[in-house]
Amino acid sequence: MKHTITLIPGDGIGPEISDAMRLVVEATGVDIEWDVQEAGADVMDKYKTPLPEGVLDSIRRNKVAIKGPITTPVGKGFRSVNVALRKKLDLYACLRPCFSMEGVKSRFSGIDLVIVRENTEDLYAGIERMINDDRAESIKLITRGASRRIAKFAFEYARTEGRKKVTAVHKANIMKCSDGLFLESVGQEAAEYPDIEFDDRIVDNMCMQLVQKPENYDVLVLPNLYGDVISDLCAGLIGGLGIAPGANIGDELAVFEPTHGSAPSYAGLNKVNPTALILSSVLMLKHINEGEASDRVLAAVKAVIKAGKQVTYDLGGSATTSEMAEAIASKIT
Ligand code: NAD
Image (tube, rainbow, N blue to C red; front, side):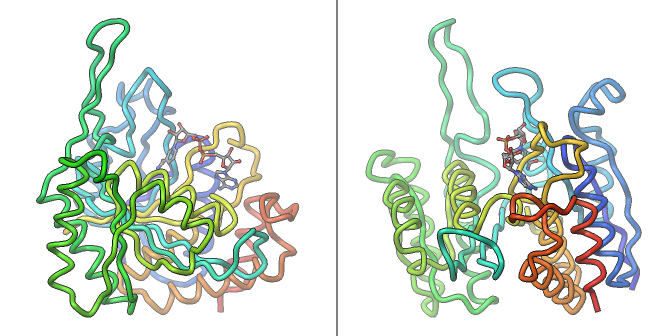
């Protein structure tokens, strides 16, 4: 079956890791037509917006997209294209599996966690204003609907993937209304899944627990901002951002992207690790019912990383982005 998939290379290191991902996915023989769409800082002059409407139309048409990272200026300039995509397309669930791989040097081993981050509200919605030159406020919006919806996603994921436990992460001791509502909503949804264990942790304690006893946790469900922060923490547990994949999923549409950003200082150097985007394509292939190809890409990534010879600098090697991708592609059987 032929699949048409929107490909957004993004900016910074995005284009080079996108080429690497394409090479690997094409080696599986799955019939994919890439509908390449430009977005990000580099297209501002051309389209007068970092997120041209054509990009959204393409994703709505094709239902599935994979993207490289897109830069968001700090403190000024345009708002995040990544956040806008998630909100405009109602990609409410951010899924980030974090698992240890043999051959990756890390302080931890045997990590097997899944982050399920709410993607549409919380402080991350950017509802904020300057009250005057010296005061600013941000609104933390949490709704029962979005909280129940993300909780349902987490429990359904746990059930489908044979996972045992879902942990809700919050700060409901301090933010009794907003995080209190999130926790209450997840608890209500948990009651529908008696086969899955449910517990909760306060976010600061969760950070400590994750570095002391990560083996006690399985699927974590979090509001947007805690999800953002803890995703990077968990990427650190498994050996860094270069190997942490992700997906943004809604009821109709899905956009796959790595956890990491555009790493502008590495752009164009053919140096960074393409694995996070390649592992995002593993999730994408599974999503489009190409499970067998998905397994083959995952096996090839694991084989190259375990051998440790053709890996990028962050994994202790000296291979370029494209050399590592070629090594992975050549291992696809
Ligand atoms: P970053 O993730 O881009 O990079 C932080 C550091 O992590 C890099 O300096 C590098 O040392 C390492 N790293 C990241 N990706 C790597 C890879 N593939 N291989 C090896 N090492 C890698 O984070 P940042 O510097 O905080 O953000 C840069 C820009 O990216 C910002 O504009 C930010 O808003 C944006 N961003 C975009 C997304 C997205 O597109 N979804 C996500 C996060 C950040």
